[in-house]
Each structure stands twice: as structure tokens, then as C-alpha cells.
Image 1 (cartoon, rainbow over the protein chains, first blue to last red):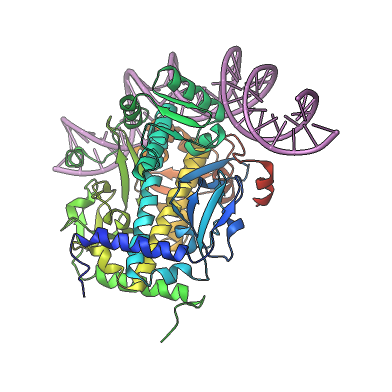
Image 2: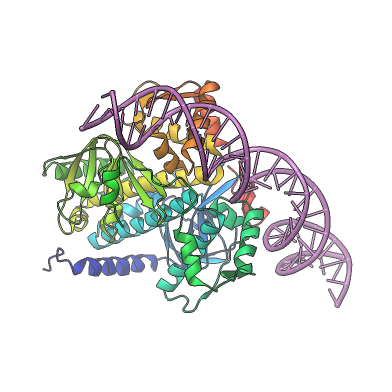
Length: 247
Length: 247
DNA sequence: CGATTCCTTGAAGGTTGTCAACGTTGGTGG
DNA sequence: CCACCAACGTTGACAACCTTCAAGGAATCG
């Protein structure tokens, strides 16, 4: 009877949870979708959880006038629909960006079943936290950075995520998003995305052509993503708290 | 031996989880902070979860040049730190916006313990999903709406959340944020926040003065928050998928 | 009642959106 | 194989929204 509370075992618990969840995903046959299809199209029941086994997908939100915001982008291995399961939002707002392959877990109360296993419950909480951090990073970038900074953030983000999963090793990767979609993701128009990509290319910082990203100057790219310089500095309440917040 | 899987009992499970979590919060004495203090100041150990029992708080992200993005705002009753617990982010990025009272759950592996109870595990997943939806809404608003639309979204959001918790009944509520903080939350400068608030007041849509919000025309405010009209319409892949996405 | 922070307003400039046109690509059918 | 079409990419000119800079007034706190 192992205690779950030692510090070292947190990571082990997560690994266990990931493995168990993976087993669940393999109980149903994978489904295929083509670019542009909604993930709902692969849903056998109302409450479904997906795992991306090939391709790219995204989560979006539409406005009544037709404009669209892409709020998250899913890469190979990502779990999709965790946050939607407990709410009426029927995941009609997730779409394939390329041809994709999905593993699924369905059932009326999928998440209720999953949380019955404490390892999976912990892993699910970790997954949700991870997606939250992605959202926070994007939010901060869109709030504080200009167009170039946002592009830098996005390109670095994909770079980091792909490397973390050993999906790439060098400084080149494939980015299947159209410039229109990049615009929806970063809160910019196609025209401006295009202009800024050109300027990044002209300055030999990063090259994005024909859905292929080549990072030329990682240092400058990182600096673009970190330095704000668009919003009014400091939104704090009192100077004392700032000194405590020293980074 | 009640089955957890009936459709009706999902809500009951969540209520049970909330109750149990509430018990845990009451095992430690509440702590007080004043406006501007970081929540870390009330943390007895490295891994802590808070519940806001009085006042307002926020989560933020700083950039190296001093600019700051507020990525979420916590109201009375909100649980804070769930997403941080499983990651090294030490919640140094949460701050009291007013004087606040916090209930705490600490311990080396707080979340590991909590997920051992399936009711709490389910409720925790629900809480994480709820925060995620807030982030998605804000992200969409900042991506697609102009300054007035963002302000409308924010003011409606607080209105809805406060009403949902029966913290207000009419169309007036107290908003302790400074205009600087509103700017950091919406990705705008103080100056522009001020101007847009004036214009909303002049048009008799909503009145925000001295931290007091009075909604004058709910319908027009809602329309401002819904209609995008700033970004290029439609960011889809092919027309076929759009017809399926009919709303 | 000083001092700090916050609010408010004006003028000027820059980043970004809009509009329009054309080139490019990829898929489809004759 | 070529023509065609639709979506995507690219570029220029112009306008709008928003930021920046500056300065004074109001509010809050010790």
C-alpha cells in the first residue's frame, strides 16, 4: 500500500494517470476528419473527450457578425473537450485545421467515470491546468504585445510545444495554419499578419513560407515575445507590492 | 450503493464535491490581506489553494519591461490556485485588488489529497473548466471587439457572475478596479478606457463612476458585447464546413 | 494638509484596420 | 492536358482606432 503523498510520486501519479487515460482512449476505434470539419462530427454521444493522434485542431468562438476568434490550438497528443464535458457547451466550437485522427472516450458521464480513478483525476486536473496556462499566455500576449510580438510568441510557443514532445528536433517545423487563421488566433487581420511576417523575414528573424517555419534568430525572436512595450507600464496598487513581486 | 452514472446525479455530485471542499477550507483559519498584496503572502507552504471569502482578487502576468496583463479576476466565492498547484508556477502572480479574506488549504500535495475523493475531483474539474471558459470569453472579446465592446463584455460579465451568486439583485454593483487595472484586463490604456467609459455614459448605456456600475440600457450593452465587427469575418477552411457550423 | 495615486482632457502621432486589386496556388472537370 | 474556379497570399493607399505625451484636477491616505 504505497502512500501517494511523497513529493517524488506526484510525477509518477501523473504518468500513471496518463497511461490509464491512454488505455481508455484505445477502447474505441479512432476516427478521421478532414480539414474544416467540426469535431462534433466524430462524436458518438453528447459527452465526448478526444485525443489528437494526427494533425492539428483548434477551439474557436464566433460572434454574431461572423468574426471568429481562435482561442486555442491543439497539437498531436493534446486532449480535447475536458473542460466542455461538465458544461452544456457541446464542443461545437472545435474544428480540424488539417486532416486529423481522433481517439475518443464517450458515454453519458465520461468525466464522472474517469475521475473515479484518482490517478486519472489528478492527470485530468493537470491537463486542465496546462490548457489554462496556454490561454493565459495567449491572453497576456494579445493584451500587451504589438503584432510582431504576438507573432513571435505564437511561433515560439509552437516551437516549444513541438520540441517538448520530440516532434521536431531542429529549428524548422510545419505550421498548417493559414494567415487568416493566424489572424483569428492573434486578434489581427490577414493583411497585417502578412505585413508583419514579411518584416520578420526581411530582418532575418524567422521565415514562414508555404506553411513552413524556420527560426533564424532565436534570441531576437525571444526578445520580441518578452518585451511588452505597448501598454502602460505597471498596473499595480502601491509600490510595496511591486518590490515583493520582483522577478 | 448509488450509481454515480445517472444523468441527474451529475449535479448532485458537484454539489457534494463543493460541500466537501468547503469543509476542507474551514479546517484552517482564514487569512486577511490588504489591497495590492500578493496572495503568496498568505501561503503557509508552497502548494496552496485559496477561496475568496471577501473582496476581489486577480491573476496577472508581467512582462520584462514592466507592463502587466490581468488575465482573470476573482470574485467572492472563487477558488484560486487550482491550476497552479500541479505546476511550478508558484502563484506569485495573484494579487488582492481590495482588502480580502482567504480560506486556505495547504500541504505538500494538496491537490493529490483532494482528488482522492471522487466528488471533489469532479468538482475540481468543473472549477477548472469554469475558469477556462472565463479565459476563453475574455480572449475572444479582446481578439474581436473594439474598446467599447470589451468594456461592455467586462461589465456584463461581472454583472452576470454577481447575479448568479445572488450577490446583487438590481442593475447596480460595486466595481473596485481602478481604470488602470481595467486597462490591464482589457488590453487598453488608461486614457482610452477613460474616454470610452465617458462615451458609454454619454450615450446612457452604462454609468461607471467612483467604482459604482449602473447599467442603464442592458439591451444595447449586450449588443455591444456580441457584435464583433472589428476583425475580418470568417476564418474557416472551406465553405462546406461553414454550413455545418450554422448557428 | 501634504503627497501619492488616480481620474480627466487635449493634441499629435503611430499601429492597425479597411478597401481594393492582383498574383498564386490547388483542386476539379471538360 | 488545359481551363476554370475558389481560396489563399500579397501589396498599396487611406482611414480609424488607439497610444503616447503632457498637464491639471480630484480623490484618497497617512
